[in-house]
View 1 (cartoon, rainbow, N blue to C red):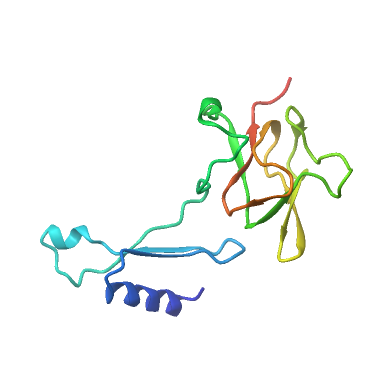
View 2 (cartoon, rainbow, N blue to C red):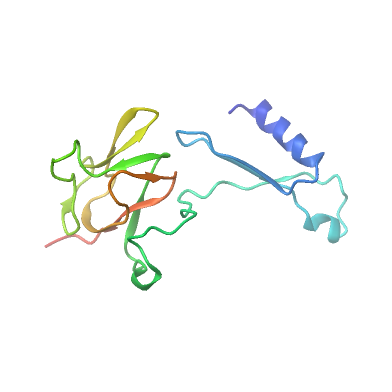
Length: 159
């Protein structure tokens, strides 16, 4: 998205009564514009510029996964491996073959973790970290959202 499109979105928000505008096209493009409503109550001029908030790098999914409950909340040292796109999650390269990774398995950067199908393209998702997979958070062939946690990784080196 270019700067002129962002400026036009800011003008749209300033001229309207909406509180925010959020756009999330595929492949990591994201924009969130929030109108600063509190400025009018703090004595600021009504024409104060809009505030642009960066998108969170790892937004939480809107609905909790069936495999992840509050009772087994992740420990602080665990790293969530999140989906880089919207699509369908697959644990194995094809039906009837073993999963790329299982809970308890050690991984290193570059290891394939899963496939996410988006717009009929199969995208292999590779690890950026090394460690041990603690938990798989998504069922096979389930839809996933951008930023949704797929795996929990313990980055502690294995002796």
